[in-house]
Length: 164
Ligand SMILES: [Zn+2]
Image 1 (cartoon, rainbow, N blue to C red):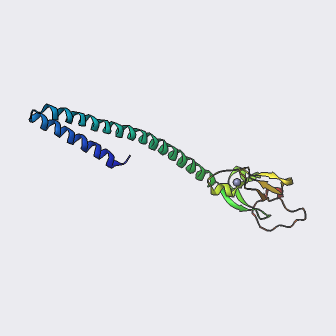
Image 2 (cartoon, rainbow, N blue to C red):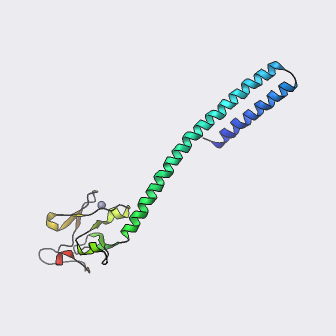
Image 3 (tube, rainbow, N blue to C red):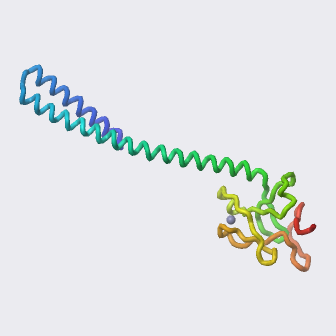
């Protein structure tokens, strides 16, 4: 609803009331009836504007609630992802691993870096005999920390759960 529409409706109603007052002062019954009809029309305009505003306000309140929920989820995600750090697997895959002080650091827990960039936490699952991870959100296969069968590795890492 354009604020100008509401102002015009209120202005029209005020003008119609002024015409009623004038007609009453002039004791002109015909003008008073016309001004009353006009005032009723302007009041209907105001009523329509108010109903429209109620609807728009409800939409804005819902949108505000949705955005608050989204902000809350993102805050929770950022609090959680602070327990992880970017990690390049020994076979060159980029993912997130728990920081060393996290209990999960002793397990083969990996998060998808592409999902994390979008504010989503997705656990990667091993596929292909553990040589790759799969992202359930469709980010494909990520080479894992499991060393090649012939022992060749590309990156150094301070923890490899497959070395145990
Ligand atoms: Zn992903």
